[in-house]
Image 1 (cartoon, one colour):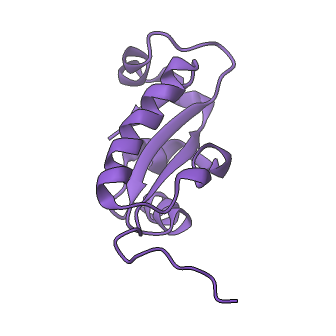
Image 2 (cartoon, one colour; image 1 turned 60 degrees about the vertical axis):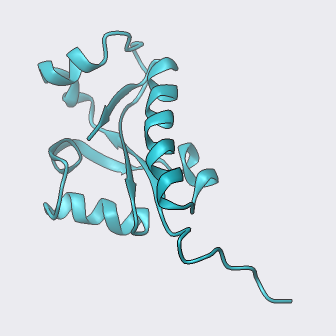
Length: 113
């Protein structure tokens, strides 16, 4: 039995990167997260047309990198995003925002580009 592939247009992904606790020392990050709940993770939420592992590696290498991920990124947290992927561009664009909002509402410290 052949496996069903998603259409080529469904190659976008949302992803979540855990950030080091020291990101909380940045005023800009604290200001963006006034309702942060002590003990919850700090994360970056993004979207990409690449595999999330490849995108994370590019961030860490400084290639089209978000400085928070480059400087504070620890690892991907696929348990928070894998169930949504892959999807079309519009879906990923919208899901990136929705996922960031949901995590912030759950008390996470969130950064989105």
